[in-house]
Image 1 (spheres, helix red, strand yellow):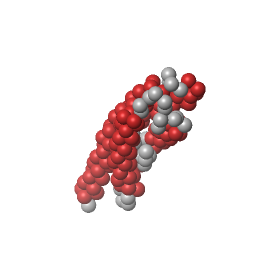
Image 2 (cartoon, one colour; image 1 turned 90 degrees about the vertical axis):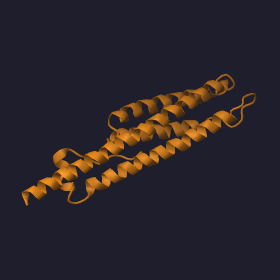
Image 3 (cartoon, one colour; image 1 turned 180 degrees about the vertical axis):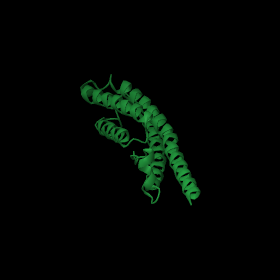
Image 4 (cartoon, one colour; image 1 turned 180 degrees about the horizontal axis):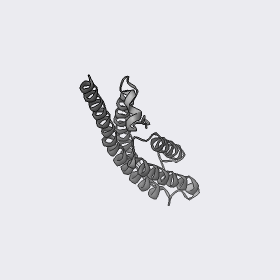
Amino acid sequence: MGAALLFWIVGAYNRLVRLRGAIVRQFVPVELHLTQRESLLMQQLDALAPVLPNAVPRLDALRAACRQCRAASSHARVRPGAAGAIASLRMAEDIVGEARARLPVQAVAGLDLAALNAQLGAADTTLAFARHQFNHAVTEYNDAVRQFPTALIVGLFGFRAAGTF
């Protein structure tokens, strides 16, 4: 009986470690796509700055939002399973979205943004897919953490529920 309990504890622990590792692996593409999108946004801002001098506050707001998102992403990279770090990243991502919505990026006289907008659209799509994959890994892990009887050993080994992005 004791041996069976010990084997079950080892198996449950290994499963939780494997699922937590999947969260870490699934965060790598999220961070990569965030970086790629930020690069495209900086190209867009550099293209818009000379032709939209009246929009400087909005351009600066997007630059600041991108910096905030980069900082939150760096923080989340260290512990992608930490709910607080992911919540900060999610809020920073929302701020970037709000700042992007305030920019006139469809048509600016004398500037062709169609190709850059297409690249940004593709980057947004790939980022959304990477977020979905990350959130799926988080959901699997959180389900395992809450599952009885595994939940009995979660506290013993310091496992905590992870946050979705």
